[in-house]
Length: 276
Length: 249
Ligand SMILES: Nc1ncnc2c1ncn2[C@@H]1O[C@H](COP(=O)(O)OP(=O)(O)OP(=O)(O)O)[C@@H](O)[C@H]1O
Ligand SMILES: [Mg+2]
Image (tube, rainbow over all chains, first blue to last red; front, side, top):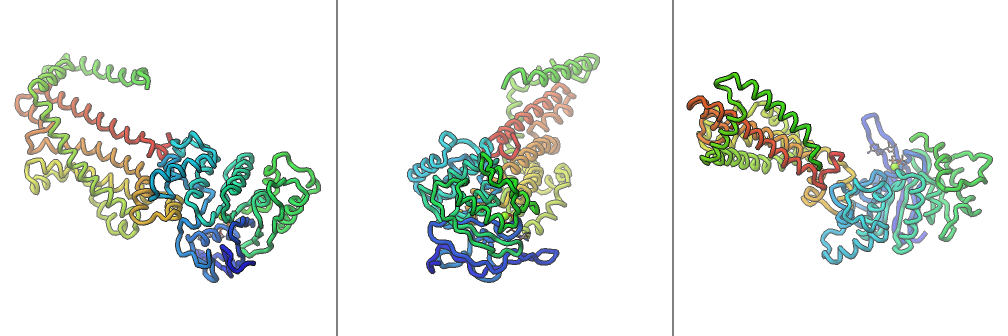
């Protein structure tokens, strides 16, 4: 891998001390992410994926090893690496427009306004500029979340199960939107997901992480150009590979693909994520 | 809002007035509603009504705003910094259950019989509910908002201004509403002692100087109506878009 990688994670371990002793979340994690690359992390629940993103975004520190962005350790959260989580953090006391503006405070007003308009359009929320979050659907809220993050022009976008709370159909739409947005504005992305198809659909590379303490068990290059058809032979094969790494045993009728991608995988992943 | 919505409330008020009227007919001292309306008209003509209302509202305004100015910053510090909470909360919890009425003798001792005593009592009455509500509101601010703000490089006082305060505002407003209600209760009680203006004084004076029970009840009715008006103002605050998310409407 290139020595001038955007993100370098070297020998990172992390143990949480609790009242009942320690929990080792991560052990000796090593990987690199290049500028503009999209990497997905998949692995069983509790294997330390969120912990890893928290460290890269500057919310936490590794016990051993180093997590470097642009060759420097991340000492505090900043606009350079914005983290989007499943719980969502769109401010409920601000309308959509002001939420988007939050990340670019201090910018001249006219500039901020045109930028807001651009991102509102990019995520398809025209007409909802003045709406308050409690008036939006879950999918719309996630768009606000994504737009607000992109508007701050981060070098890296960290997404921790950003669409997990959405229904299968909305999740699929959000994926397509994300691909469309990233085609127009390339970012370095790290995505944590439980949904193998989501990872295959979006990522250039998938890192499969083992059960706790999390280690990188396998790296899968998704060498398929966009637009991707999840039913293509190559992606089906990659999917089998990732699922078998995750220890999911496949049924006989695996050639029978569900009409809506994502609904099938939900059932499959339910097996290995049941310790949720 | 449809006028029909008010019909049940108006009906209940009408029933109470009717019962009152029937009771009062047999009494020489207890005034009828009509006598009370006349008494209010008399006070209004003389100009004393406005004077008393003004005196009471003035004390409430000063005491209430003074309490907010101190209670919101202090409550915020307590809610955000566990050390502040540990240091200040015991004092707050010891002083809070003491009724402001119990402070009247000390207030007169310290501040005399002018505006200062009732204003001080209003301050006390309002301070505690607002401190407690602010501290708990700030304490309960969801971490994901704070983390998102930090992620966008917002820290320090800006973080308070743009995230913590607005996130806690619904709780603070609830505390303010409770506080204003208590303030209005207390001002009347405070004015009944050693003060010569205000609605509380009006009531005590009407009884002492000639047993004018029509004026006593007139004072009560006006207190009630103004209290209702103050609460309506606070409810307006609760319906602002910026805080409605918390009340689940
Ligand atoms: N602040 C904390 N204190 C104590 N233990 C923690 C803390 N954060 C995480 N852990 C523990 O570290 C392990 C990894 O947690 P983490 O949230 O990173 O998992 P994850 O891979 O994101 O799981 P999921 O897929 O369910 O989100 C878990 O066992 C969790 O209990
Ligand atoms: Mg997680």
